[in-house]
Length: 466
Image (tube, rainbow, N blue to C red; front, side):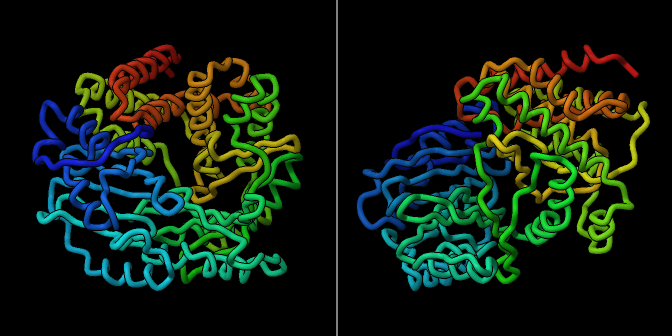
């Protein structure tokens, strides 16, 4: 959920903001006016100077009803810009003994200024503030945010790559999600060219993603002209960090916005061909054998995706009860209908097939974000991409029918059952997108979410009953 600008100043109690009949307004107040809800006091503990003069840009919110609201901000005036995460919780959080150690490390690496502290907590433990690169769950973010450390790590993995001196490089925070994952970019100061992207995770999914790229990537490139997988520099086990080469071009839907339907239709067709190659990679291929021997793949199921969809929409149940009931009913109906259809033998799936994970240039496409590469039925990839395509076509005013036809044509025929299941799964993912991408703090959120759920229900009604 994204977008907004807020100001700093004041103090007010927050006791009822996460629940009750006025929870929607409470969430909006917390996210868009965080200062009266404890943030001004916490920020004043961390800032050298008057925090009321500092602007916070709201990037994203995540609301878990009656439990917590997490809001992510950018503080553009702080030393080139800093990311801030604020969490308001219904229950007090445990005190963080790691805070002093994190701040000492940041100070020693020259990453503390212009702040005096990077962490702050309200007296009752219900409001927590973290300033990048602080993360008690992933403390390695501090060292990997230091140019010299990160450049050394990449140089050790990249071999012959000749990195410039530390003074000629800069580290940017692409995503700051304390307790979850982080994405950094190393760029040249002179021309801004990105040398590498670094993903830090709380588990070893990055290591698996690197191996998938090394094993399956060459097979995809050899079998589908113009398609590739993002190439890794390697994996740093000590930092739980996967390091990736930049992929050329622009994200698929950015390309669509700039170049129009006709141009991007060729890329969408190529996405279909690339997914078909992955889906048809039988167990007798070299890549499949190596992947199986190394135990790299988790298994994804429709039932698992349905459960994740229900969890994603928990806040809709509370904030829009009628639409929430429709949301859950559609999920249940999709499962019933899928249960009456034969399922397919699992194979390779990308696991997160959407436009944000596909780079496009004149030479072809590159698949990104391999963390969810899995074993599963092919319809999961097809359904997710169709749902994402519909989302972006509506947002950008593109012709959905043209692009959907290009995707199906690129994928190829002889898959009636697969597409029948994909059409139902697309309804499931449409709901999930409505829950995940809608910004609760947006005044139009309620009407947009209600409409998206109603459209998903209507699309399901239009599907022939098996």
